[in-house]
Amino acid sequence: MRVSPLSLALVLGASLLASTGHTAANPATLFDNPVLAKGKGFEIRQLELDDAITALKATLATQNQAISPREEPELRARMLERMILTRLLVQRATAADKSKARELADKFIADTKSKAPSEESYRRQLLATGLKPEVFEQKAFEQAVVEKVLEREIKAKLTVTDEQVRQFYLEGIDLQAQEVQETAQKIAAAGNQHTGIYQDATNRLAQIRQAHLARLERPEQVKAHLILFYTVDPVTRGPLVERELAAKLALATNTVKRLRAGADFATVAREVSEDPDVARTGGEYTASARTAMAPELLEALFRLPLNQVSDPIATRFGLYIARVDEKIPAGKLAFEQIAPELREILLTQGVERRLPAFAEQLRKEYEVQILDPDLAK
Picture 1: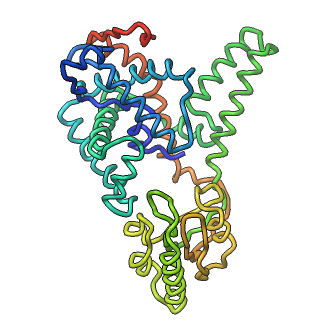
Picture 2: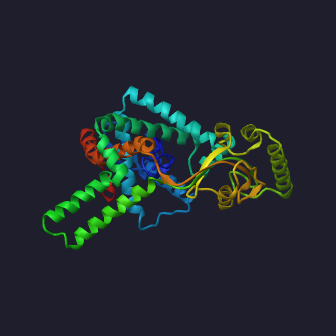
Picture 3: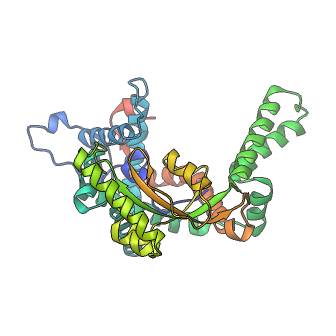
């Protein structure tokens, strides 16, 4: 149920994608690049929207998803609305908002870079999504500015009570469930509890609550140390040549011998592992049956006896060496552990509820006009 302060998906295009900079256009292309929307201090042209849609398509393609021609007109209208909102919120930002956003964006960018084996790999991964690194980093900053403005303008004015947090934990009632629950109660109060509408509402409420409570249940977990040797190119996922594969297997076999002879796992991991996070984690991970992990590795982690160093585990992307340090039985997350996250979810939902009215207020204040009738909602 974790809420990320700055989501990569948002930066890459699932939400506030547009750059606040104007697309450069020479006189020869101005007629092919009309203004689609404008307001005080900004305008958005055709090529900017086209670029945003192209970047979103590239990002979705990396996730084996696509936008159908039938969906594109509505998507373009929604994207333009989000671009407008981004422009308005960035204009609304104070110097303090921008300073805090810079810290948040810099941390996000550093974390993203740390997950790539090298600076060149970082650049290649971004280019594969259709974004130059400098554009990605600018968008990360803009997204952070948006979040800081929303924090100041909306989130800081919201209150989530301890009772609401505990109700979320015990009953699975968040703001969405509360809204459905209130609808069902109004239908019942009107004497219509035997109707299909009432049944639909109660079924929906049960589904929401069940989903929330299920996410509070912690599955069986293992804490383990891992070392990775890639057997494919970490960026292209293309296979290594036979000579390189043999060298990786020899290195993995020798590493197992060192660990079984008593070498410190974290020290060896930082020395030889090709895991991009190893400098930060020392190879330490916690996994459950839900963890996105190679199935061969996941199976081995739950099968290995405690404190035993595995033989090299072959997966699609590489060879792993594992040692399981602790096995944690399934159970419900402790309230004290999860309460801050539940409170943050409720605050985020509160922001989402108030955002449409706030966006409309900004549109009036900045005199926003959408000039293309096909993109006007």
